[in-house]
Image (cartoon, rainbow over all chains, first blue to last red; front, side, top):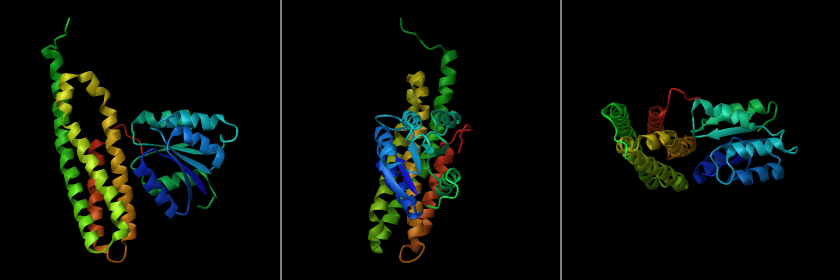
Length: 123
Length: 150
């Protein structure tokens, strides 16, 4: 299963991608929202993990663009953010995210959310 | 005309500043302890020839150093809260966000190394790494807000 990880922080990108690779996922990565939108179209991943605080285009706008495009609107997006306030979840869902998770990432919790959005698809 | 804060205005600002000072004090201890434990683990890992872990331990160390810097920067908050309460209030969400980013790295790399060291020469270092993760959780609990959503 191919996941697109959109994350600008080098350490968090390296760490999360390696942890997901260990769980059997194929990972492609983008470092900002603009690249995330481009790669959603070119890579057509099974699911997108979208950090929301991103340079160039933030995660909310990138998600809106992905969900507005015919070719990519079907791809589930999980918003990831280090913000953890009550309104953040609603803000992410309003932008088009299918689900939302907070950092620090609890890997099992995140994988449960990925699996819930892609039932029957093995890693 | 320059506005002069009345004693009526100053009271809640001072209360906020005191609250921040207490929080800083509470954050400093686990932050410094975490950095010390990670330094010890790195030293021990090098002595045991766990060279594969060196880069990840360096990343954890860098994240701990960042955490300590952020906590010290936040220690200036009582003054900022008194001098410019509006600006100080506007930064409140940011520091929680900023602290969570290195905490994410510490917890993620720490978990990976604990998995890697389930057997072999790294195994005795697992307890120290687990202690690091507990300290990270302690910091997270301190910066959590009642409105948080998982």
